[in-house]
Length: 291
Image 1: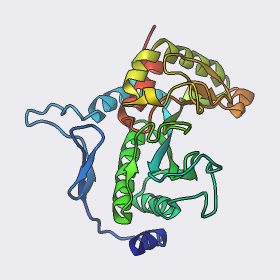
Image 2: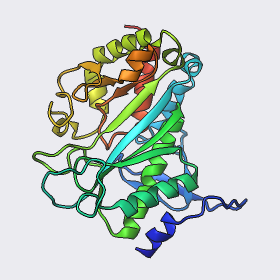
Image 3: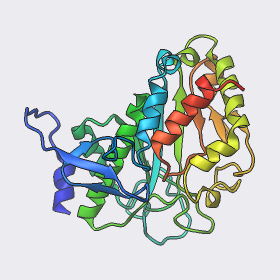
């Protein structure tokens, strides 16, 4: 674990004009990451068409639309992931102590490495299942949210590789009375963040409800095993929203309701979702779609 220790103690104050570039790309399954020297980029066929797994291309078109650009969409992606251990249910959420927190050295190393790489990582915490952790990326504007989450995933894969630990983005890695793993997506537009924005938030949520099936189909493979109506989820076939309701499809915070402006949280995306698809789809439905 000495390499992990080196990452935890990484000095973020040093600067250098030299960089190591490594190409990172999303493999054929849409979830496997590969690399050969570090740069995240779009991928195209020799004819110039985006390859099937290049979801960034369409997302970039949506985020470059004038109506979307004008609203400066903010995202904060709350990404759960699991390091696989076997334990009984217990007080693991935000837990501390050797009997509750498993893999903290990995999580702390990941946080430091993301900061060093310039990722806008903004938080970490232990989740409900032992060995399950969450990190947050954002607030990020538009396409940057997808870019940053994919690179943060890559960094996490490399760190768990060093640690010899199996990493899972499966939305329900352990069956039974356990929470699944989601990628809750916090979202707001410029108008929602301004006075009177709560009314626009409610209109946006109404639009998302009308396209619930389309969003569910794009929100991650195997999500039906997670969205059961239990373990702080809404049933996959039902759309509902509420204030401070963790069992809803869309949750609005109490502070947003009280202030009359702010953001909302789409709790439906699975931990294996493609952030380019999810973020651009939310923007397209709420800003460009005219029902």
